[in-house]
Image (cartoon, rainbow, N blue to C red):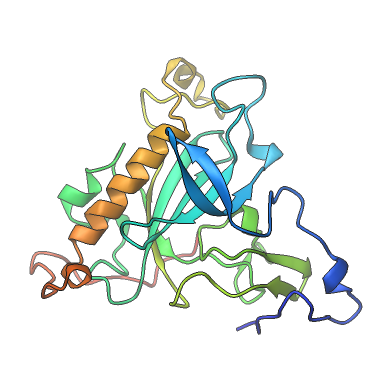
Length: 246
């Protein structure tokens, strides 16, 4: 595991204190982010121009990654724009949650069907530490579904600057959904997806509402969070956490 470094720690050949923010990160401190007629205390707000749809549209004033902790459930939440221009939503549950480690097709039907299009993502934390690589390179924080930090980004190939994690557990299990289903507008469709241009764009207000509902459903599945005895239904298959990393 890469050792965490404070913002003033110097790595060989790098003046970390003067490194500044990564390109696209709005702030190194929590900020109020308006969404769906309210606001969340966003721990990260990223702008990822490579994923933003062209031209003006309902996405014009949207960020491309927003991460926060839901005040009601205490779960970490993320809205993230995909390479096709659509938005996806994710909620992270800690070890000890009865559904930690369950893949998407193994989740209870009532939970899986409780959000738009059903659950399509259930995987462990993606981190951009150099031990876990995407095609030989560290993952970039702006695209990860993982713990939220004020700053965690790659300074050099094997040098990571980070502040303290906002979550108690080293790993979370992220459960999520996407908005690239039939009837949804895909702003940047791949070849063969042109028929999706006529759908409805699922904006951040829509995704935010579904994220909150997913957090509520995951809380209901965890009786211990309300002081109740936690039980896992006998019909649930054993969790499988050995799948490929996203």
